[in-house]
Length: 152
Image (cartoon, rainbow, N blue to C red):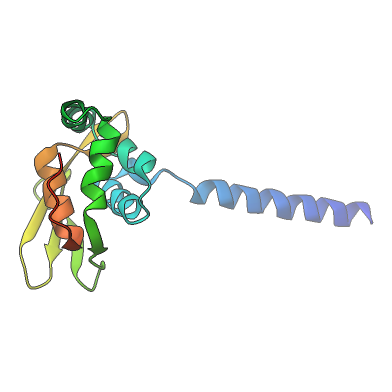
């Protein structure tokens, strides 16, 4: 292989790596990004990702619920998400909008139904879901069908 060809391949590889790194930015850098990331984690039943999108206040709430049943806070969150048997579809069933007056408030507008408000908070540069009322609104907005089990 000629030296000029090697340099071209090396430059092309470096350009590809830079584009890959640039595209992998943290989605939690915006309030709506945090909400979308939580929805995706819930749909995939990935409790580690979902747990990391909760504010310290909300994690403490779930830890309190878990202690009552001798489980972890993550187990309490998993129990709530496990009740969802079918998720609503974005664009078809609801839309996500950043509130114009409060940039950390996200409105999940259910088509033909109510608007669910989800408040986020900036924790060290990453946005997270703020409190239990916001979590309840978020779960209500994305749930199409759920089981009515008695849980936490």
